[in-house]
Image 1 (cartoon, rainbow, N blue to C red):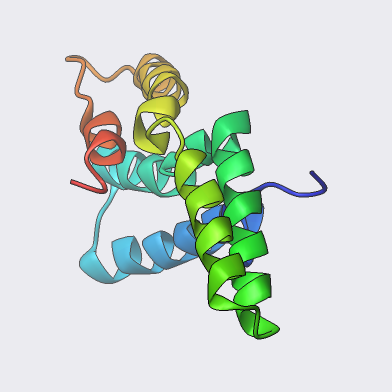
Image 2: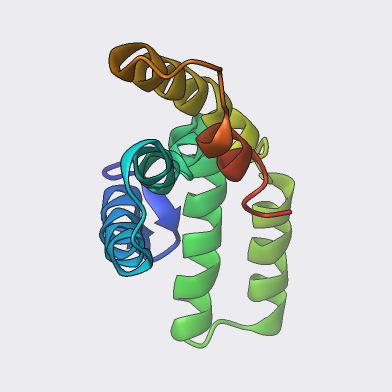
Length: 131
């Protein structure tokens, strides 16, 4: 496994960076500041970090093999076999795998900035971003 993937044709690092840049632009346009801005950007940068798990990467490799076979005009039988192989590698939900990272990061931010009540805005956003 050479690089971590977010999608069969998208490196995870590129995806997280792109979402962070987009989130930063949206936060600026919306006038978000302080705690809410920090939480929004934290959610952007960590929302798919759970895709770095071995199980998700195995699924991405299988999905990539399917996409490559489809692009080269593989037979229906081969495509069906590759699709079944990918489906069998369905991974643990990446949003749940992201939980410990965003939870710790959000708690750290709260401590660093002296935020009074624990507010898990970023954590909630990451956990529900596919719901």
